[in-house]
Length: 219
View 1 (cartoon, rainbow, N blue to C red):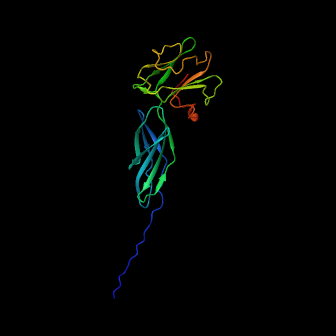
View 2 (view 1 turned 90 degrees about the vertical axis):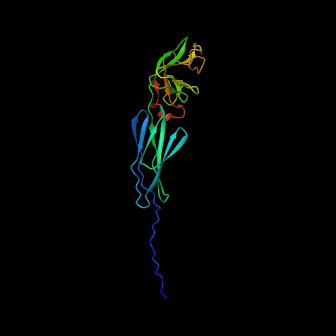
């Protein structure tokens, strides 16, 4: 009887993750960025797709991407964390290191501080758009306080914003609430002789590493 000849083919199983490279972030202006990475290499099954992860505060967001770049619009004055996963067609995964990025600081300035019988702080928004303030904090440092120890901090009220090319009045004492955009306290809060005021885009008690260089304005 004629016997069938069985040809055995060699199968190569791809269990090797693709090579992956760190992220590079290009500032395109107007709070627009492009996140680039070198095309991942996979000599066996080939690259299938990427997943880009973005963190703001405690929240993560995921984007599924075929290209080796991603364009993204950012909010004012936020710390972003990004990392990338590369998937090959066999299901192997490689992960990049995390990359931090700080978005642009808006031109919001402390324009006036008054203490004594009438105690208030005035801000001015020099941008062409309204700026949402509800995640921001106003912090007061007495002369004895270090950067990581603000003497007092107040969070701006929910929904508050400062309009484009406009002022925002923070009244502490002796200012009628009718004229104030915000009254975080109704008594004396500021030292008549010295100290500093800082506007932060985050809670200063939760972001100690950034206090010295990532703020809106300081007087």
